[in-house]
Length: 546
Ligand code: MSP
Image (cartoon, rainbow, N blue to C red; front, side, top):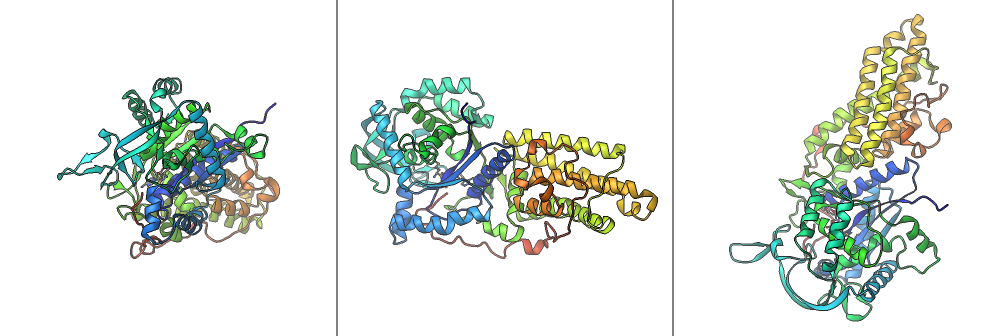
């Protein structure tokens, strides 16, 4: 029997024309929470992220900064893009750079195959191009300013008029096959609005499209025409397969990885790059006789002043600006909890501070410290044996089953805010239970000893489930909580706990030794939470960015 397929999730590869902002970190955080969740379902997982390093935008930025594109990319990857993964606590399995040898080899083999299959031919491109999007624009894609200048609607900047003898990908040949695919797989693009947009774009008619550039030199050379490089998007999209071994020699570990991993289960993209991922990319895969991704999910934008946060418009906030104050767990929690995945959302310090304080510091953090403190104080730190359960205890046990089931169902459909809400309501229920049961009163009355033990056991066992279910979202603090519950010697590492079994009562054994610790979510004064001024990103952007 062959091994079960690896759950494979990807983020886009990010342009290295500048340093990351929270819009980029948002995509990676979502992918990280999703893949940690699947790992905790006991699945084999592969989570890929990386950088998109070729093309005019990066080339021009490097030149504007007086360095070669290769030097520019190496510096930014090393000093900005890799560090941000640590900052947000991402546990990616791989990081692909599109300038790497494995990628270049895969790209060349892929396009050679498409040419052999008859899907690449010579033609002339004449029309608008947005360097910030790195996109050949269709007539309906551009705006006309009052003075007649054609503008990119995403970047508000003039497009460039190109006339190039290029190689074209015969995208038009896949119109019917794509429509047929999406009819048969109505959930392959989500949310529904993104699916509708993709289908109507395809129905509007697909034209062949340049797959190479003759006026750009920073890219992967075409194997059959060394004067041209692969158009940056048709190089970058291939990272999803080159990173897992496409183009590697047969019977190597790399080629085996490809067989076990492709197709992708989830490809996360921002809604601005949906067309590339849900029209061009599947057509390319069809042309290469490869399977299509099972799901492309287009999330919304983080907005500033109602507009997409972007480097071009100097509205980018670096993740560290938030994480230095609130920590990576709260960052991960906040963005996935406060914004419905798929919709746009605004970030504000006030909202972040308010939710942090009420839900994390006062809600979960306070519950955890009260519970562990009481076990330490009333039971010499040893988790007591519960006595007979009363109705209130059983109601909490039922709520725990519902929380675990609800969270799992929501997380696997990428409804992160509903997944978090399922656990959050349970935290509230446990807090209410503590308030109503008043264990501090029970402790005063020796005849209530057994009841006190039952209540304390119930609260700690509930915290055990909360820690397991919140671990994919807040791995640092939940692993600290796991330690304080004394769970490791009995149950093993928190990352190995199956989220689907989290609702099963009675896993934390009486006798476990608990401990108190620092606050999981220390209180932050409102005035301290907002930086005095907007912190500039570490590098200079030449030709703008995203
Ligand atoms: N390099 C291309 C992707 C190639 S994938 C084969 C690219 N890079 S990007 O750096 O501009 O953007 C990468 C991702 O970050 C996209 O998913 C984009 O939507 C996301 N975001 C950039 N700004 C964003 C916001 N303000 N809000 C949310 N996500 C945003 O496009």
